[in-house]
Length: 282
Ligand SMILES: Cc1ncc(COP(=O)(O)O)c(C=O)c1O
Image (cartoon, rainbow, N blue to C red; front, side, top):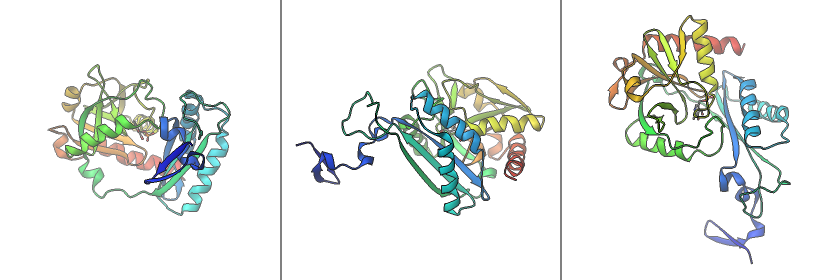
């Protein structure tokens, strides 16, 4: 008899429900997206859908109607009633009764979505956050927003132990890749610096928007790699992520950045980003 155990209770394996047979659970075999709303409007929905479609293609999950997924996101958001919300949606390759690495071609993908209310921590944009550098132990296709987040989780745990709110990942070549859950930026003089896109980092939507916002504001943006030592010597640092947009980094390991407060360029970008959101969601 094939058996399973859930919460210390035995049951016949063929009575296992779909979530317990999900390839996402066994192998992290799936991709996801997170987007947010600002004051009742979903933000950058097209960009998130395009990245999701690309992630699906890169891991060879085919046959998903992306417009249908988009409609599910919209319908779910309308139902939740939150002005400011986070929307997570995932597609895994599906559930299979028999655990095998090679997927069954007939397996139907699973869709899973959650929405919760987004609360911005008071003072975050003024006080900023502390970050801790951690080794980047991720795989070689970080441009895919896959469910495999164990190295990110481990880096965040280590950062948390050191009193930091984000882990800044450092690759084997000694350069910063990105945050465990955010894009990383530095400011040198009046120029903002971020790593060029590639397999080492997620094509962050907030990153792209910050670049656009900077360009519109006449702030030069340069794509190049930085070592932690170079970053610690910069006048300002900040991170960019959907759920928080632009957040100053005021401590980098043991080094206090820009006097422990939000620097002038970062502050300008925060304000310009706000304007950008207001325009795009009008
Ligand atoms: C590893 C990583 N990099 C960057 C980001 C920021 O991406 P986005 O701006 O699209 O939220 C995230 C967001 O979850 C992330 O997990």
